[in-house]
View 1 (tube, rainbow, N blue to C red):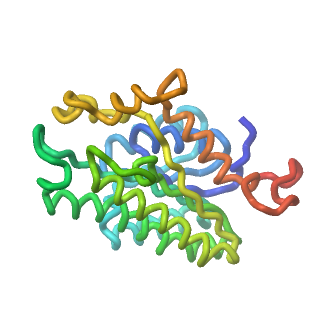
View 2 (cartoon, rainbow, N blue to C red; view 1 turned 45 degrees about the horizontal axis):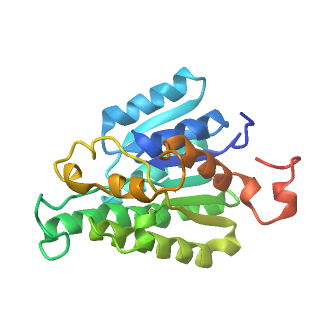
View 3 (cartoon, helix red, strand yellow; view 1 turned 90 degrees about the vertical axis):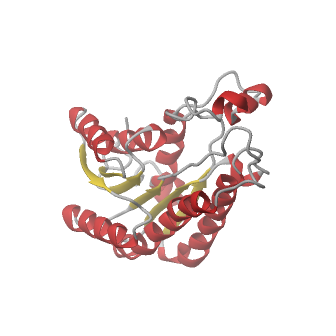
Amino acid sequence: MTDRLAGKVAIVTGAGSNIGRGVALRFAAEGARVAVADIARESGEETAALIAAAGGQAHAYALDVSDEAAVLETIGDVAARWGGLHILHNNAVYRTFAAPGAHPLLDFDAGNWRREFDVNVLGAAFGCKHAIPHIVKAGGGAILNSSSVNGLVGDLHRPQYGMCKAAINNLTMTVAALHGRQGIRCNAIAPGNIPRGGIDAHPWAKLDSPYAVADRHQIAPRRGVPEDIAALALFLASTRAASSPAASSPATAG
């Protein structure tokens, strides 16, 4: 490890498992103090314990990102606890599935779709809204949003998920356009075929899951793993991703 995030404070939502856990572990291994936020308290605490066991610094927060008041409180507590905020990774996600035999668009459940939008889109927007003032105060930093290849194509299985991720892509560009001059780098990471715990056990997945579809068309010899995404997240969160040559030089890289 290279301590590329030494002295930085980061929040990772949905950090109790899968990609979020991988990113939180990597950030901490590179020197960041990491706020591990997840709606599942025990999972978040487990991630924080793994970081502590490896010699890193972390604190777990039980957080439903669709609750704006809770997002505001959590971000404020993180900034107060560690003296600022430099990195936010909006990674929390909520997924619903059409019942077996149901048409993914013509038979959709409005309640499920609203819940996905509340978590996947508004949750990220709330994070940006309340983290940006702290990141600007710290002199700049990075916001990462977890998107998906599903946001770039028509989604045959979960159109609402693709729609949410397309919205994340636009949110990312909007934050970059509005706050780039304040030193905030905002990027979206769009993973492909990275299986996540619990999905493959769902009855829907036994029919023709996105993983099975992707496997049939994938050129790479393996599926992705959370560590792949964590490596990219580290680069984007570090000053090596800044546009200034001075900021990305070995002497000043953070």
